[in-house]
Length: 456
Image 1 (tube, rainbow, N blue to C red):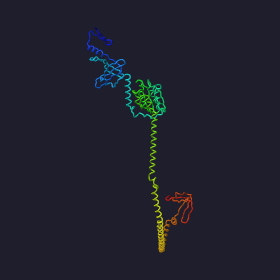
Image 2: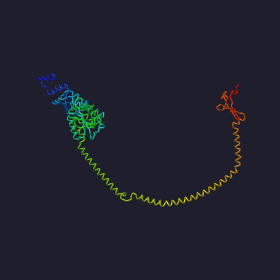
Image 3: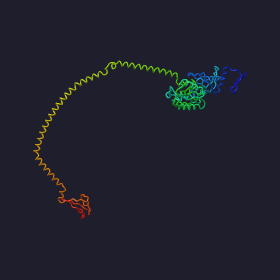
Image 4: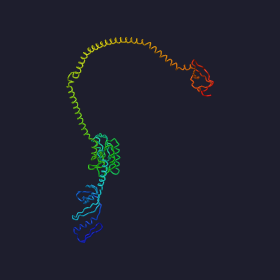
């Protein structure tokens, strides 16, 4: 019986029956010539470092294909595989002849669909973390009792109603400022950034950034780098409630607080009015108890003071001082008469000494004056003679120095019309009047000529 085999368009025929080994060898040879790219979801992942290969199943809705990837090629990928990831693999089929089992030998692997998106998000998260945007130190504190709360979300989604209902139930006094914006699709990340900046400029004290659940692709606007930078630069704290509990976006990582759902974000932003009431009641009771204890302590202190000596014993505070005053008064009463008597005796004695001294001084003064008068009378005549001699000598000296004595010897002094003494012929000109001073008078004359000594 003739049998035909085909490799796509190339038939392979055999005129004789084949053994199982030959048939599997032919199948192996044929399969290993087929190189394909396949897209599927990873399941049954076995990544044991002791194995030389990584084993997993690539599946879709209708089929499953066993795969392997040698450890050396897998390590070069730098990708951490997880079950559920969408991947695209390139390789060829392989057949294990001993068991008749077929598998796909993966030579290259890249993430596809959600898996690729998750890898991109992971890389961006690592970058922003290295820049410090996810550090707890830079995240802002959430106000305990905010009066104004900004809500950034889609105005048509279910999340906005859940948040508003929760805020009203927990803390109806808070004013909610709604900033409606699209939360998915093209341009959503840019719109969210604009809405957040507007909320940051408002009177809100805290900002809620929320949206309901969706696929990983639907949540991608919240993994945008520019949106993350916007959140990090806001002056108001941001609480995120994006998707459901397993969903964690980059916006969650950068925000001041991440809540698992929009409702949980509202609960984190607003205090529970019942809890506040309970706290206020407890605080009121505590203050009343403190006040009662304080009053009782003051009353006890007053009673204790009343029992002390200053308040219970009459005159305790002023007794010693009064006794000291009495003793001082007695000493003064005794000291004043004694002091007056002593002072009077001293004054009397001093008066007697002054009188005796006065008499002695007057007597000594009289005797001294008499002796001085006698001495002056004896020396008077000799003093007169000496004085007359001195006067005569002084008169003679003055006479010799007088200019009149020079004039008596025939000299004269000449004065011009301004009565200035003339010392040179150059000081007068012919025709001028002069006055000539002689020893016994003056002559008024007119100069007719002048002649200088040594000139013809």
